[in-house]
Picture 1 (cartoon, helix red, strand yellow):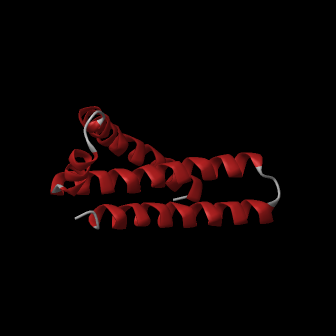
Picture 2 (cartoon, one colour):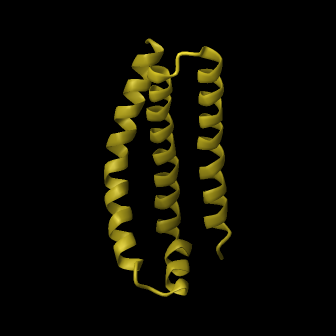
Picture 3 (cartoon, helix red, strand yellow):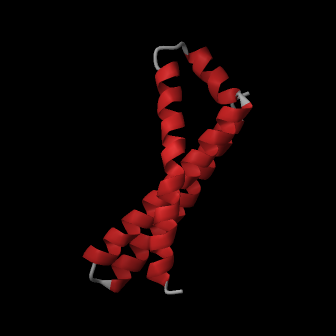
Length: 108
């Protein structure tokens, strides 16, 4: 399978997985929007919320890194700049969700 076909397939699969997670996140966000800090902390400390939000963050960053790398492929013509941009993008797509998940699991 060609690399661009794999990227396209991963983009479509991650977008399909993101739909129910985004719906869950929006409903949860609406329910905790006007709550106190302690209530928000309790929400993110509960086990189903931790797991679902962690999966949501990882897949959202995976999806965004795939789509942004396609923009780099289309609009950056210098291969050195394109490679550096893609590597920096993938590095941030790993580090930021990892830090977010570590922060959520250290809320207790």
